Length: 601
Image (cartoon, rainbow, N blue to C red):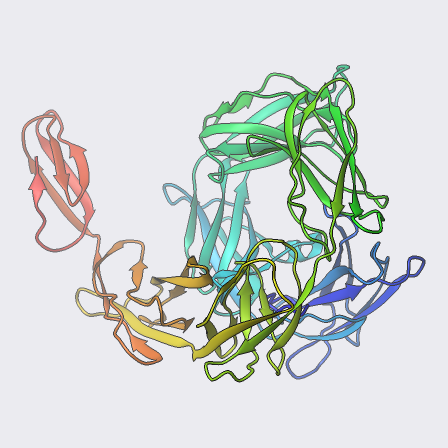
């Protein structure tokens, strides 16, 4: 299957070799004028263990090449890993190659600058700022996700005494996914930060957890990753690692409740008992009672080919209770797996299908007790291969890009054909994908029910990108530079489903902005924000054509002060802001917009 490249860091798919051979890989990194880039970081991530991928790296030599000798994948015809390349001052190139030799072209990149401060605006030094990935209107999804210690280090900056930081080598025009960490502050993970913005990232005071992890015999469990996950999930969290005596600290936590969990090594038969949520307060260290891991009871089994009965390695298996994961592992080279859990009732299933197989539709529920049960056997059927054909509205073949099953993009060849391997026995759903000069809409059937026949024909329409331009101004009509402009985009994914995301750009010194590579099906208005100002009018997008103009976004400065007197201790409200008058009835509001404002008491 040929996947449309969506990774701006150059990636080389490395094919496995025979079981007793190494796979030689030579990577050459060049600039836009085909000149070798010396000292570029080239890093390989191997797929030999999905839980703990192996990374190996090298710097390019005088001819711009870095050479590797890699172990093969357990299956000789499957991908063994991928290669990323990054160089200081250069942006990303995107290419997928099935082979052992490749030339990667990197273009000059942009620099992201900003500052880190506390809630009062005081600079924070020593904060670690890390770019985790980026997006740029490709199915409204991340374009890349950085991995590998060397690559991550090259996209990490430590804030200086004035709180400032800078990270270079980023593709121009992207929106960043980033994280900021500091031991004394609650860490944050943000997204959709325009690379050309120079915003101040403000951190809230943080607290920490401190505790100790022992095994059932009272001995310390060293080098175990302890996680503190926020309740509700997704709000925040952090992790720490136990030392040789089992002590751990998790810092950088905001005020709130947290659930403690641990990542024990594969094959370790200890499990954590159920733990009550822990409350963390900013500026304080929460001491956690000693955690004693318990001896787990095993869930054992194997994943096999349904016909040949041959073992399937690196297949993922998990045990869940009430949709929460209790244990996760992967099969070994003999297709066997073992997980350890506390006694109870568990649903055991495979979250995904290994390459070339259908995901099993059975999810056995088992009772785990002190007495080991019978091994579970997952017998996987080979995934059928079908042909996808894309045609235009006249019925002629057309090379097209599609989203499939609301997931990654696929592309058909010049004859509109693609051989595709199904990995699920359910319906097959298509949405219109994107390429450099436009996007596709599915105008015929977008959902195909099983059983899927040999050939699936998808009718599409190719459409050009739309550009929206505009400007941000003050109420006096002056341009407002470095204003964040946002637009919501909706991407049809098939079967009535859509994927939404927000695009952000920053106005230039003349207050102007350009939002490019937009679909015309969801363009209604743009919004904006700038510190010290409030948006009062504008933003509606005009109709028609591939080049549209938004109404001027008009901002009012928040520099007005209103003060007065009323009844003592009275509640006073103006434009949604509230204060309480003092004992003499005096009240003050600052940072208000200009214009006629009603004051309520």
